[in-house]
Image (cartoon, rainbow, N blue to C red):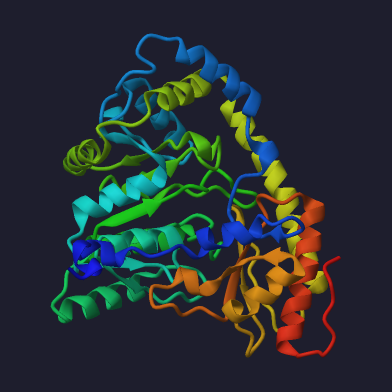
Length: 405
């Protein structure tokens, strides 16, 4: 038997993450990682969570099986978190998941068939692309005019897909501080996108892990706040702790019912201990004050990175300053290719994510993503200095090789 014949057609769509592949080299001593979008180590309320986990582990039922939809108390608390984004929700429409990544996987499973098309931003979150690929779903990137999605571009993309005889399952978007672009959809664009999707009968899936981490500018209501048909994905990974692996999906009742069934089929239930711990944290701790402290921390790190880029990057490198989130999206000088440059960058002691990971067709090699969330400010400056040296070298080859400083 051919070894490949034992695997399913669906498994052929599994793809390695550009980011995960970097973790081993980015963890080497002396390498400044600007690659992964992890929360800062000092942003995690470790001692508080250690105490809470110890307390709730002794509670009746905390170590038993939980429900497939999630603990009712936590679902009610999640509705309070979403209220900060202008969303009015009922706990019955919330499904607790193992992070927002599983929420997206479950939603894709119930809304899309193999061969369907999902529309996504250009560029799009690498984890979403992996999910769609694993489900045999094709991705069509909607052209970006620098301000994110637009109604006319969405309508044109849908028309093109439908004329080819294929079905568009949904539009996937990260409207706040997009990963990797950092772009935030304006209020006018949000209304335009929703009106267009309503008119052409297109489901919207809104992924919003960074929404509460606004560093400047006026808060914008979530897409779901304006339209009850939007499927909304949220996560505690960025505002509490990714190791707890607690996220959620908010959807119309008929979608929620299917997602619960898919979750039960996949894993019976999620961690009861983690759910009780998060619910206790939200009930007993000043979590909004914690989020405010996170904004101050990430504002400083973003400012440090922007200042270093402005001072050190060679001519021809371009970026937009994001209003929040974790990432900057760098356009490289003409002729510089992010993927080919990466080994040299690792040798110099800095890691980033090539832009190719954020496009379904592998394009985007003239861009790269850097994150300011995890490194300390001093390390950010060192990392940008090393990156600038590598970019300059790639743009104007020089004979002398320097060592990391």
